[in-house]
Image 1 (cartoon, rainbow, N blue to C red):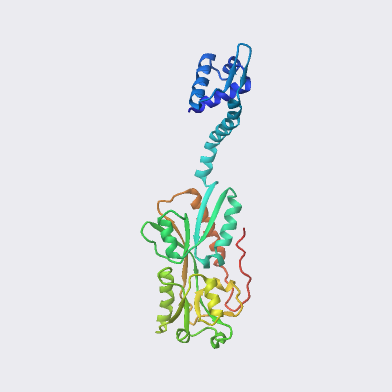
Image 2 (image 1 turned 90 degrees about the vertical axis):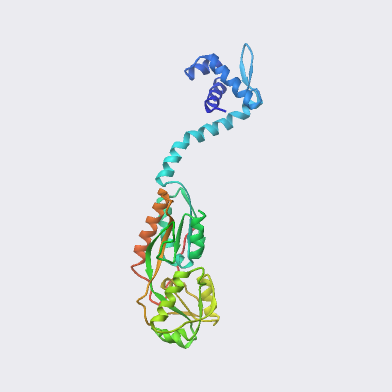
Length: 313
């Protein structure tokens, strides 16, 4: 079916006079009649009732008018949609993020992006670093916020924010009164950490801090999400070490304290597939970088009170 046949049909349906319709279309009547007949054969239904006195639409013709108009309007909009898509002003994006990113750059970056590109729909998926790497390979997400500074094959990983690590302690625990917390004493306590296979670089960074004190941590429990870790700490299962943005998450029964050696930093990075050079992805990355620059200015000190971020709608 040719689009021009639909256009001929719509003009003929408005005029209900083939000669007049042909004049509007800058063509002669015979080719118009032939085109309408071709359309009717393709559709398997007559669209016009013809007589020597008048032309009128059949029921099939009346049904086709609305659908043909929608089709042609959609076709007319394609250049605009394509241009907006190429410029990053429309479409959809799926973002993967580690849970700690929701306490730092993710909410302000999303707000900024929505203000600038209200016609782009965002989907947010909370995933570990390893899960995001796999999702990027499978094109299941467009961009990731990960806890690594290294780039796996085929991906581009760019650190945007560095955070200190803090101790997470039950408020009734003796170490809750120590600030900073000695690493050898912390290592002697049962710890709740994230699974190494899901957050390998982050776990290695935590172990490296303990190595500076020649201490070997005793991992009691593994948990994926920060909220779960905080609940386990509050329940007395163990202590933990998390990025300093966790200070923004107030949890009854839990306190945050500085580590004795706080020179180490863990990166929060933007990860994208190298083959993905979409303009819309670049615009989101720019919003994340801007949010990270603002975020790097101040984190609340461990032990202070700070309301958690509202991630918005």
